[in-house]
Image (cartoon, rainbow, N blue to C red; front, top):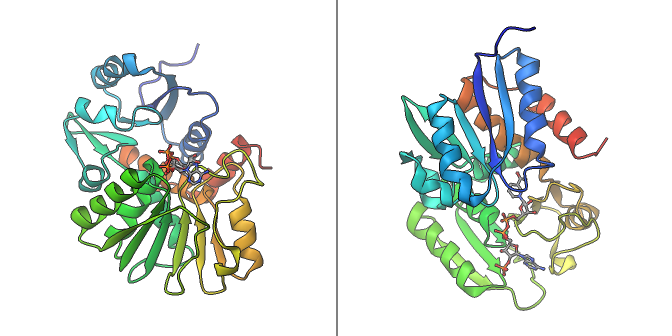
Length: 283
Ligand code: NDP
């Protein structure tokens, strides 16, 4: 029998929990760096969320991720929010700090970290397709990272206008809403186009409704969709000379920032990316 595990406890609360690529990615980082920590993937329903959070608190967990559908509901169970999570209105990473549970959002920060491998968003004009959870995180964090402007393009007017308002009021960066009622032509002045819709998830041929002849060299085109990472948009943009970025970088970034919060260690992104790719069946 091995010794009882008394290291750092972390994990994820979501439903459905199966297939969550963060699990193998974070465990790979712990193993690679020899950190005495575990990451438990827990199936938690909305009705069980409060008990799960109380359990993590009682058992002294260092923190946990909240994935669908808990990113908003968890907020009222926490003691405090980090400033950007407050603006975004959603939490994906909870960190136990001095006995208090503090909610962070590393999704958008992970996106910015990934974007910076191609271009720094400071001073750039950004177009975000979508206004759901991923779009909120991406739009707010790129604005906080110094983007000059954010254009939100969405089918649902209410959600799109709300996100533009959240960005403007919460970050001071001017944001405008454009209704997505026809094929979207990327303006000449745009520097970065981000697909933050779910189009392309699970379907490598599904393409967002964008005028392909407006994807040009000089533009950076990023997708948040992880599986498959080479989305139809990423391929079309690459064929037209744009620099491209897939959603795996954001996935790795959000996980790496969570690990840093929980352990104080800077994990090796390459190790995490390889583990995530394996978990998603990409190699
Ligand atoms: P939500 O359900 O919150 O939002 C979905 C968004 O996609 C909405 O804005 C919706 O528009 C839009 N949309 C859906 N279908 C279409 C369509 N056919 N045409 C145009 N717009 C469409 O989802 P999330 O924001 O949580 O997730 C979005 C994607 O981001 C998913 O693929 C998810 O896996 C990925 N993601 C990736 C992460 C990463 O680390 N790489 C992290 C988090 C999410 P409308 O409002 O008009 O309905």
